[in-house]
Image (tube, rainbow over all chains, first blue to last red; front, side, top):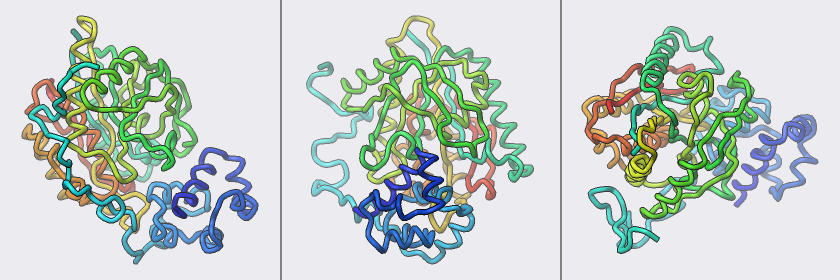
Length: 121
Length: 275
């Protein structure tokens, strides 16, 4: 998943201040270390957070990315104006199993716990 | 048997400690609410605080996202990589024994929770603790809930986790005093075009139910209903976990502060429940 790898890059920068510094000075050698498409690399060079949002990068990761892209949060929000829906909405990404919410094997008991035959392992 | 002596919940937005100067009079009132929580916490004299919270991609990323993760170490370090919080890094004491018994009791009760022997703390843990345990002297048992990446655990299941915590507290040594602290929320959007919006109606409805003791009704909210408060509103699962811990499920909450602070992009609340 491309959004996964873009987010992984940002996660790595967040945990490695030196690498983050290198990324800000010259993003290409850092981006080479991740399996990113040319489009994704270009979006990062352009600090195109709207592209990243529509790609499906987790919004919390987009908020974190601003520090490493050199954007203020407010700038990033303005740039994202008019973005389409985030692709990873629950109904689209992880559809409900055929049994519906909760399935056949999960019972909402009065105590909000699962009834099991043995109470202890 | 141990006893739950305090239960509360508070916002953990990083601006609370990181950007006080832009919060205006609303911030002043919110801080006063946090001070009320601090005073009642100290008066309750807890021995341990079980903190139900979420983090924001510090310990975990999408290559490994636990739905529920208990920190089973005797110490936790933080804040990590978060100079914007303007808080010093330090070591928070934990309680491995209670944490491990929580993991065991969860497994016995149908919750295969994850555990970590080395959890770093971020704003989700530290911002409220900064007010409630400013000397970091009360051991913290962190219970991380995934509220940031779909699919997230069902809200009513986290309420059930609270009931498991009640069982664990009952198994503790006689006279041990346990506090339960939930963090996060209420309405906010993070990293989306809506960031900065606050659904005040959502927050007021949420707090109104809490004040009436209708905690169980909130535990029945669907993720879609919760999402109306923003992607950040999913953090109310942490509050729902606290509600599940209440010995009296219909205990009324007292709202020490509610301020929808646009410059902090969050509807910030501070609440305690009678226990």
